[in-house]
Length: 131
Length: 97
Image (cartoon, rainbow over all chains, first blue to last red; front, side):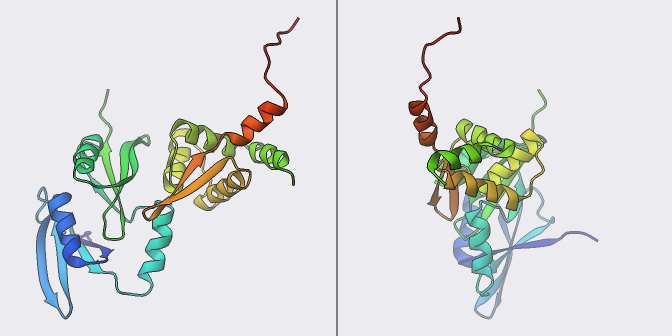
C-alpha cells in the first residue's frame, strides 16, 4: 500500500492552482474537466511521480464549518516538508504570504504555519540542522 | 467572584502559569501553537480541549485577551490584572533587617 493522493478543499480551484504553483512552487500534474470542476492535482517538482495533492472544490456543506473551526484554532490541514523553514518563511513572506505561526522550534523539527488563501492552514516542517 | 479572586484562581495552576510564560515570551499565538510548545518544550500532555479550557479561565480573569485575525484566533498575555495586584500591595524597596 502507498499514499499516492491526499486532498485539500479549496474555495476556488483556479486561484488555488495559482497559489500552489506560482507561490508555493508545486507543478500541475492533472487538470481533467469533470462537470463544473476539474480533477486538479499538483506534485512537487522534487518528486513528479510522487504523491499528488488534489485541489478539491469546497462545495460540500460540511466543509465550511469543519475548516472554520480548525482555522480558528490555528490547526493546519496539510503538511509539506522543506529544507529550511526559516528560508521558506522569508521567501514566502516577501511574496505576501501570511503566516499564523512563525518558524518555531518544536524539538525534532522546525515548524511554521501559513494561510493558503484558499481556506486552509498549511504546516511547513524542516529537519533541525545538527549543531 | 471579584476580579482579584479570579486572577489568583487562574494563576493557581502550573499549566496555566506555563501558558502565560509562553505568551509572555512570544505574544499572539493560536491554540495550535500553544499546544505544540506545551507538548514539545514542557512535556505537558494535556489535550487540546483541556488547553482550550485553561485559556478560557485565563481569559475570564483578564490575563489573556484574544483577537481574530484572518481565519485564526490569536491569544495575547495581558499583564493589567497583575499590575492591579502590585498597586494594591506595592513591591517596595524594603529590605529584610
